[in-house]
Length: 506
Image (tube, rainbow, N blue to C red; front, top):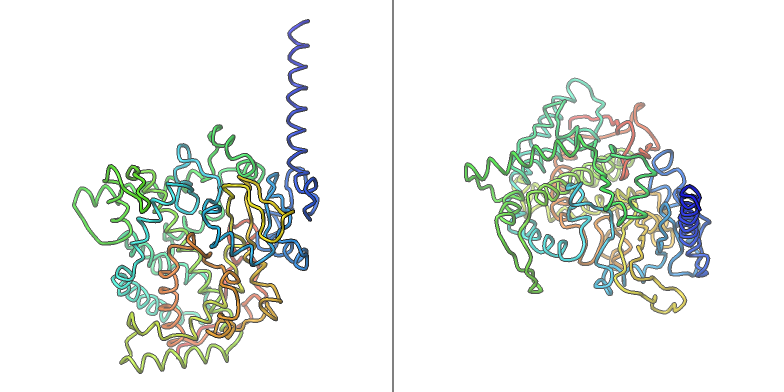
């Protein structure tokens, strides 16, 4: 028997094993009798992903198709990975809160060795996540928030000055771009002590790389899907998600900042100081008594990166969408303005740390904006152990299986939010909120793994929107897109072409 024949036989056998394995994956839900759409051999149930459909479109369409099913979850294929697509709010609550110990991980692809930017708090699992969550929580404690408040206000005052200058030259502004610049300056200052000057600098590299971090990828959608479908193999092969120019920029900024602070013994009591302290400790003890090593420099880099990107995109987009809706609904804008003026008059025209808590209606506007425009289309969790859905013995989430919680589907479900595409801040009155399960609103997640920076994000949004609405009137104009068009290539809900609004000084 010659060598060529043997090699052909081996190749045929390997192909047969590969095809059988793929067949087993793509018939996973069919064999279990779980409702699902037949998957495409490569794209699964995400046809149009990264080309002509946003992640929100895909998740919302799938949710609406199975919305009236009695099943607690349905089958969904993310590329070739079978995932439990959750349909029942009670099951959502079990996963995120009641049975969190079994769903504390996310199972997202990261590669600490070859792609250090990917190994951040949002992606990490197990003891690494518990360490960072435990230690970084102090950065967003009440005392820290109060210390950062004057800095946020000073950036907001610069925002007002820039807005006045812009309106003098042109009454139509891309408000999405202005909000992005404001947010970059806030986070750069509060987190890293870096004056980004994005509001003044049209070519700000912080803003440039912040935007590109959400769209630029190292590989195309098929290799991206491979990393998600076969994460263990992808890690062994050294696959990297982060584009090289993105990694180079943030690595340079963070390494230079850390080196300068350690050399000059600079302390700012900010997020970066906390990361440096964790790096310089040989060992740290978690709340459960587990002893772990301090952070490496690459781990410091990853946490700085995710704090900047997550805070930049979510807050700036939400503020842009809020002003768009206020322009479309002038009676709501007038109501917000009246509340702001009343609170400022009560506090001697000072927007203090205490006074922003009294902006109840503005908070309702922000919450309704976060519902209507779900920046993240879904949440992901991973089962540690085999999980039988309470009350549904035939529905089992196997150990190691991922679950999708369709935030945008829940946010637009008419049985939860009647007339879901209408902008109605009153949905978030205390009475209305109390009438719904907490997991019916998920812009920041819920349970022990909710967004760590939620309170910081809400604080900066209240400050900026309050001052803007007090000083300017926003309205629709011929340049305003209605409806908005979203970028299908962005990882989150990002508008294409900006948000053009007419702005008038009051």
